[in-house]
Length: 108
Figure 1 (cartoon, rainbow, N blue to C red):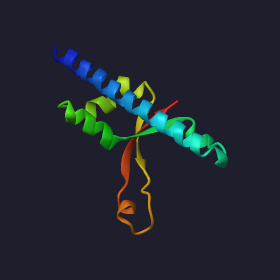
Figure 2: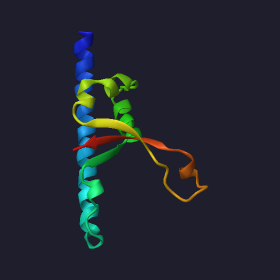
Figure 3: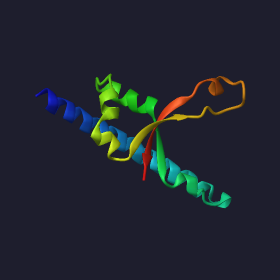
């Protein structure tokens, strides 16, 4: 029963993650349309980034706290997801530059 419970949790977490990917794809498409005058940016075409903070917040709302096993699971890795450190943004010396953030990346 525990194995089935963990499997169901992983499938639910994957559903949440895929919904966040879809949302970010829509935002990316909208911003691409608005910046059409700047020309295409091929570097953005093969990946979507999801805030790990946002994903974990949604999981916590459902009572799921420890996601370490999900990040190691086949369902996460075999569907093209990985975790990366995102370089800090903002001016040198600003609070945002002092801390990096982790993101989930979906490779296409």
